[in-house]
Amino acid sequence: MKNARFPAPYRHEHPPVQNVNQIADTRLTRGQKAADRVAGTVGSWWFIITQSIILVVWGVLNLTAWVRHWDPYPFILMNLVLSLQAAYTAPVIMMSQNRQAERDRLEAHNDYQINQQAEEEVRAILEHLAAQNEVLEELHRTLNELKENKVGALPTNV
Image 1 (tube, rainbow, N blue to C red):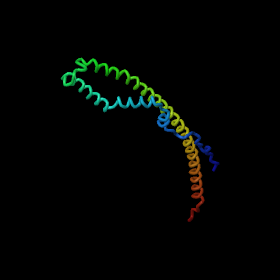
Image 2 (image 1 turned 60 degrees about the vertical axis):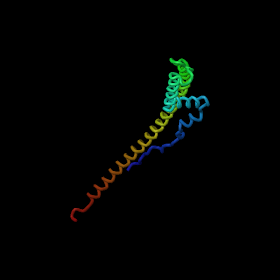
Image 3 (image 1 turned 135 degrees about the vertical axis):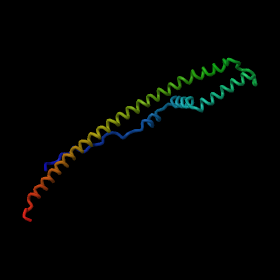
Image 4 (image 1 turned 30 degrees about the horizontal axis):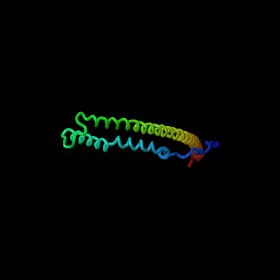
């Protein structure tokens, strides 16, 4: 049997996989954390329901005059308050989304690097399997030859 040639052993020389989310969280500034909290609050059912209740109470109190009319119909003051809220929350939400998009880009890049490492390792494994297949085929051929030689060497008058 000829000498089997196996590829050199694969060396894992890449850095360990890192959690991009933990890395991104450690780099957050106070403003970014605040923007995330505002976006999380404004984008919740709790906020929508609470704001809806406040607006309904505002409207009912001003229409029924149980309390002095501080904002008579058509609710100009309520419109001003909602416009101010929208004017400030929209840019804060955009800041949060921009930061999240940056985090997504980091995660995609990290996934790409991990995929490259995995592809390299799979290629090394496939090379080793191909070498093992060659050796196994050679062993089978050798065994079959030995078996045929042994069968042909047996006496026929037994």
